[in-house]
Length: 304
Length: 327
Image (cartoon, rainbow over all chains, first blue to last red; front, side, top):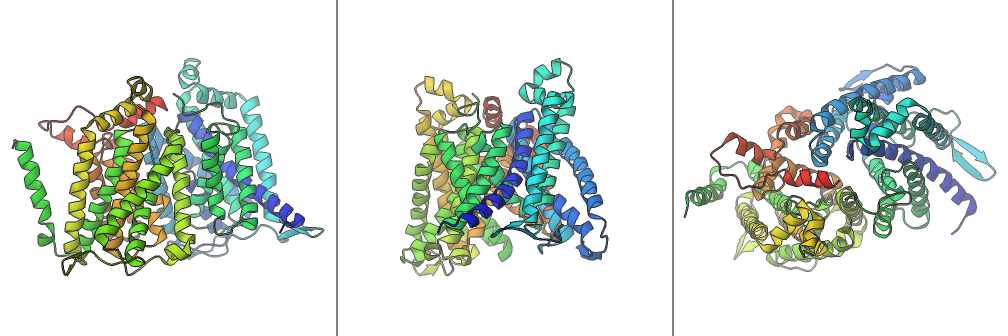
């Protein structure tokens, strides 16, 4: 039955999960806007950095079946992961996209699928198939306000996502690099004519997208466990979020993500736990049928 | 009969001798599976290769055929010879119901809607316990019988799968070279121009979707009565992706490409098995390399290597290029 304090808790944790979807959805959209392709490996850019982080943070971890005792300081590990993933984003751009850039979208989609299969199974080889528990960053797990309890991690997620979105706004609206990224996304040929090094800007966009996925992974893994499948459902729901908001729209992705996070949390509680994971896709199909351009989309259907 | 026809006839007979030559149960099992997957991929080829519409729900239709046939033969006691076609019809009916609203969308949007649909279907398989027995799946699915002979070995089942594949190839070939096939191709090349020529694009796109669903459902029934056990995890989004990869690697606009891709990529992971844990990882890397270095799929590669082979005018990857132009 309706319970206001439970509902408020569900909304807050839904917003936190929704922020994760929003970050992953932004990663999708930036690459889509830049090169017109949906990156099916985006979810694995959530999973892989989580594995790297957890193996340096935990006191002992099995890597290739041998026990490792790295246990480095958490902040250092996070920075290390971001640097590694930036390099990985560049590599991904060079291998999976660059050779195929003139061949239409389907070959690139298939090649990102290949990368996804590769990464998931690389993770399984390196870290095994047992889920790994990511240690919490907080000594106090929940914050109590009156009769309500909020997870500290949820509040951290909301704070970091807020800062990131503000950062991205400044990047896109106020810096030359951001303007070049937007120009490339809008019209590649014209951007190139105006002297923008389009290939470099596209590579930077890939790196940025991979980093968004990595940050989402680092934020979400203390809530879930780290498994090779952890990125799959998150990325599919982020997909759904980006459509609901209007594909290609940045504010749309953020609001779509938050909406799906909150609705599925409430639906899971009030309607059915079994079908909680279906809620995002029911919303997706509903939106596609009633308003294919989403809430913020400019186009009515696929560009003609 | 011309020379090419004779070559094809000899090849078909040679393939029918496989169960006499191969004795390894394991190889035969992979072979039967490959033939059945080829049917699924032919269906997907009708939709993507012929018509230019992308679906990532093919595993869901494969699963619906499997579940419909399994439930009809276990709970209702139908003969598999009736329940398998019933599975195909069931999948086709759902395909029609879903296709009508979804095919107003195209390109990435259609792909995304089908992903959503596929995931919902798998969740139904997992959670509708009274019907599907939930995550435990359905076991003791009966094999088909020929008179008193149960077709319950991989040797005998080979002929069921092979026969179904030949029928599927024939149907797909007839569709391709008919008025319907030409309408599909016109829609693939340019939907607006096709409509200007009087082709009802929605009608034909839904028809392509229904055919793809029916082939998927047929293959689902076939696999259910071969393995005689089904569970929801075989019909995931990942499986849909694998079917798509098979089609694109094989060469998406040709029936030969669909069959070659399905058979090769069913065997490829098995060939890589000696690499132990890393075999699926290598498979992923191989997919990337194949897309980069074989732009027209395996069929396109063969055509380039054998210049005397008289290629039909349509280039296999053409479908993809025209999708790219409109996307």
